[in-house]
Amino acid sequence: MLQQGSRKYRRREIATGLIILLVAFSFMAALLLNFDFISPYATLQEDLSYLSDHIVNQRISVYLWMGTAVLILITIPLFLATFHQRLRFLQYILALLMTGASASFLMMAIKGLELHQVMVQTLASGLDQTDEASRLMMLEKFREEQYYRYIGSSLIGLFAIGLGMTRIKISRFPVFATILLLLSAPVLIFFNWYEPDHLARTVAMAGVMTGVAIFAVRLINKGLSR
Image (cartoon, rainbow, N blue to C red; front, side):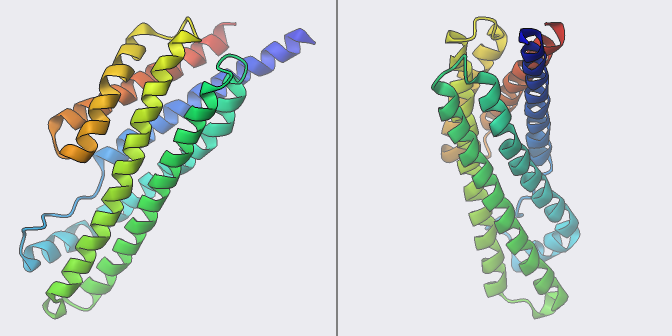
């Protein structure tokens, strides 16, 4: 009976590690292919020309963020089931942060779909028929979309800090991953709101996702080696 329970726990560790790894890859893919409005200072014609050339990229970006939100949501019950005995209380805080991040990215995707609809309608009416009001509407939708992105990314940063702190309870938590998480996450949160386009934010995001990926691989290895 104990052996059967151990096998179930090993499978749970492997499944949790794999889904967390998928979240990290999906998140990085969404960042790399994230759609960006050309500039609030560009002319109307420049914006419309850019949008007409990148409307497919914007839709792909929306679906990637939506996929990331769904993957995070799937991770939560597996994460709770895997760590409920070892973390006791911290895993609920981490699960709450994951729920918030998932909801934020989902709202971002919804705003992105709204932006896509406005883009399609605007371009369908013809570039010469589009006025400044339509451009401002698209810019506002984009700002709302990015606002939810900053909230979600900040919650991911807080999750990374909490994950790094689990080393107190999990003695075999990789040291390098702990350092990456605890150093990169505060930088990510700061630049999310201070200067989102700063290179330090990109580096911090890479550090956070690398730390999360190392944790996930370690979890998979533990499940396979037991």
